[in-house]
Image (cartoon, rainbow, N blue to C red; front, side, top):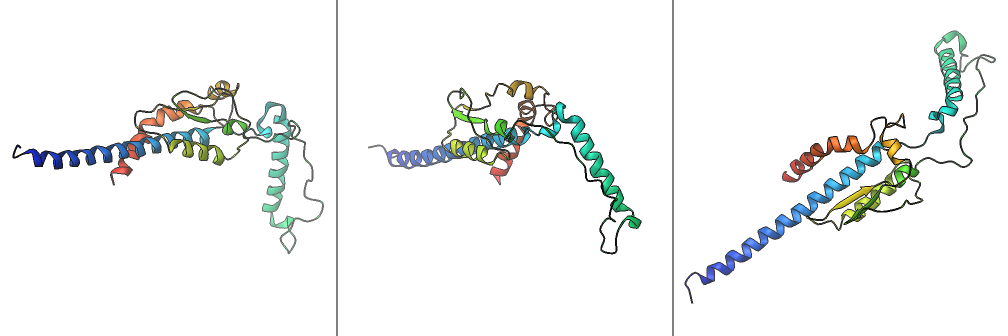
Length: 197
């Protein structure tokens, strides 16, 4: 038996502990990065708003002008009663209907960001998620099993995803993926810096 053999066992255990901790740190960092990328994509994603649709431009502009006119009336103290309300006959009570498909609710695009590991999702989902909370929750849950070395995907397969990415929406004229790609290094740097503290 070598006089150093007892030392190598302890050294090996210490190295394994360092390796295990480093892997755990890498896994957690990767998960945080993927979650932040998903959150960024979701927040940048436009939510359908019929008032912004070209076919409703005139109605939306008219309704805004009526609202502005009524607000201007309230700014003039001569137009107000002692109780602070507009005097009768001054307020314009008119509006134009904003047309949208019957039962339309925006949020399908945000609800279609899909997270997978190993290969990208195919197809679409029927989720409607206007604020993106449910979709982000799915990304967070899925990222919980990510390990360093895994390939993670966040995709949106709706047919109008590419047009939206390339300026079809006034809410996201510079897209979502392009902006997230530009921010990627700062996302990584911020997460690594935070994890060091």
